[in-house]
Image (cartoon, rainbow, N blue to C red):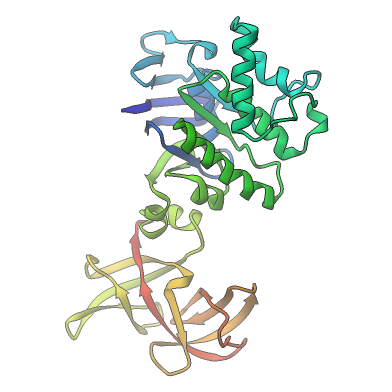
Length: 352
């Protein structure tokens, strides 16, 4: 059963189209990450699900309940949608301590003092804030403030948790730590999450499934590995990780397919299954290019070397193209060295 269904959603701000005929289904118990560049409509979609924006067309279902339909004039207010939301800036009340911030939604709903204490205590333990309930937001670290904001969103036991770039204000090490905490919490309580980010590494690390957006449209959805290994378009290939885009021609030679690079050089590709002959654009990940000094493959020249400890990046010119190559340090190649390269795997993509 799905936790959310978004059908034909459209939202405009004046002349700007934030969402256009948008369709998406979110499965119960999954972490779905809305990924895309700034201004692509991620936050507008999240706020529409929460009831904080009123779309111009389309429908939104939460579980089987229709909570928005412009055509039927239905718009369930945010407080009745049973949705929790965590904002980028935490949005904690500065004059309330941690306990009162978390308990606030319960007090508004008229929960008893005993039930409020029980729920807040359980949530404090879940987010590892026990013992900090009397502190005020300015007495907490950034990570602790984010945990408090998460606890407040969870205390009402929502059916859906929405997170709008919740880790963007934290340093890299703390972001990594809290990503793992979010995944732990999600596994423990089984809640469905819709998580907004423009950081593809963060999306890859946390998502069960990624919905990649561009200019208000859904471009491709799938598990992180699927989007990385099988991008359908140039935009997906470029946005998810680093890639090389090779314009080429696929031909058959001696019973096997090879590609002809822009300068006419022929290159074998280890995995070209299902690719028909003709003009193509291939996405080749840097780690799928193998360098050697032994003369096997297409000749090229190392233009630049970037050493990062556990990995070395090379900029290589050869075959009439510039390529980025990722390799383990081993016996590194040097700048201006002549080398040969082979392609282990490539994916054909479409261009706009």
